[in-house]
Length: 452
Image (cartoon, rainbow, N blue to C red):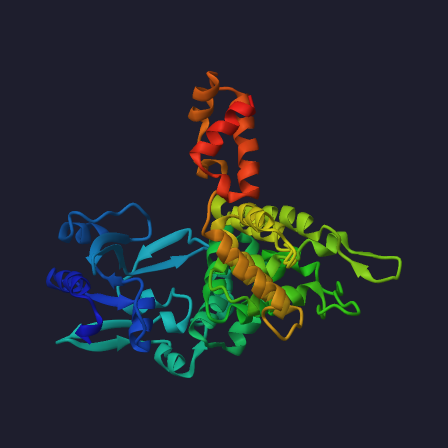
């Protein structure tokens, strides 16, 4: 067992024990040890008070009312916080998330009683290097049966902390487990309570679901539980909005297409997967019929980008994450015409950003397969990818990549910093973009004189 636990973690464990206190490994680390998977976070529960723990670890910190002391440990040259928490009981969850009353507990059983799911309510002691488990809710049996089950009464657990509603689904998809029947029914019943949880916490759980190997199944569960209605109501509008049209590969409605696009996108990046899920969110807003009575969605990518921006801001995405999602949706209808010039290919690369080229092609693949096409890439898309790779090698992609800069313009023309400098650089760039061989100092310095 000791070979599964880093020596730095064992040292913390032993130090608390030698201080005369009870101490147990608890939560996810115990679950991961039993499943023999990599442990991401190490947590302990103890009968020692925070003040007692701080005496044992003077460099630790304690700044909360929940009895959790943070100890900085360096494991495999990476620093991480190990949490040591005093046994406690909790009550009166008025905001559906945090307890109003926290009292120190006396036993590990009392502490395990407040936890969310049986697979997370297992504690482990080490006696002569051998594991001894305290498992009052048969979490080890549920691990073996691959079941997510609420501790005790699921109605009480979810009303205490509504974040557990989405966490149940996240654990199910990340561990590839099933949700136990009574627990599932209570999730469906209590799904409206998710609105009481901060958008940041919901976003984090959603992105973890999207990062899992069962992202598609996770979103399906969110929909079937009723949670998706409160988390991403914009997606629900796509239900029943048909995308079928003679001669087109799209089948079904907008909502189903988004789910299938997520399922088939090759990317494992949760941001790209999220963009794939909502890439057609603008279609219900622009749905019309042409003169033949066939449905059309003109400019849905423009409307979708605006909706996506609102969605990301509502879920408190980082600016970088929001901009990536919006950018991918805005340009996902890019042309793959084999007649495009090299400069047109370079404009595409600049438009979406060099760093986003692979992502938007992955979204296109998910879009194709999610619409019912049997092949991931058409011959045009394969040719387009080849040409993009070729155009990624030469420069410039922007004014900054040219062989001359603003200082050269000012020096040649004997002018001061002004709007004219930028205008000349832009004209030079447009010439170079059409013919990369012109990107030399000799040629561009001569052209500056002619552009004055």
